[in-house]
Length: 258
Image 1 (spheres, rainbow, N blue to C red):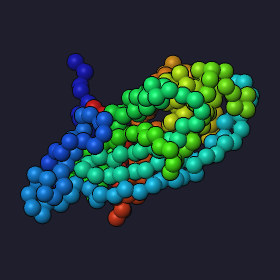
Image 2 (image 1 turned 135 degrees about the horizontal axis):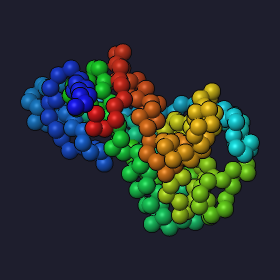
Image 3 (image 1 turned 180 degrees about the vertical axis):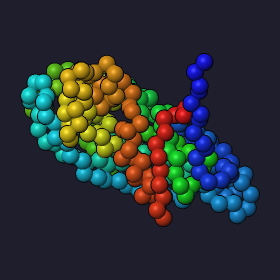
Image 4 (image 1 turned 135 degrees about the vertical axis):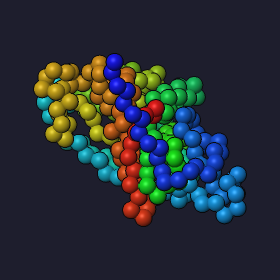
């Protein structure tokens, strides 16, 4: 009879003060309440609360691509708003959409992205009184100004420098109007993730040719847009949560349910 793997200990350094309604579509991770929210007068907040804009440069170098037009070095800025409150880290990407697109098509993008990126991980952070961890909530917000990114709505067949995805999605700033798969991968770039194609930044994602270098059936969303993100795809967010918590805070990423 095989032995079961013991569940890791709860996060945080003390009891969760309370459980207010979560901010956003996270599930399965309880939060703590602030002072005056059922925790008793003078009770400490679970985490230092903050809201700030994030902007970090990202670079990637792809080699051994098939076809070779994928090879090259690329760069962009990862931008979003990060809010921490009540044991929830909410990442909001503000997108201005250009081109002709229906409200239903924009709503389908938002639903596909949030369903793909939410309820996958949580963070265990020192300096937080969140025994069930800090939930990671991803939100798409459409705006007319003050955007993090401008995205062009494109018809099927659109390309960018000879590269194209599915249903008109050609890159981080060009999304197919009817696509609800590859847009979830492109959104991952906005969160700070490089490709996981072929060999990227020195990592061979084909495992020496044993796997497909692109859209591998077992690859995470940054290799195969049809699949879910992997815990490592939240590492840039984890790092920014640490910065927001301050005072030398340290966080680790855990898959939901572990």
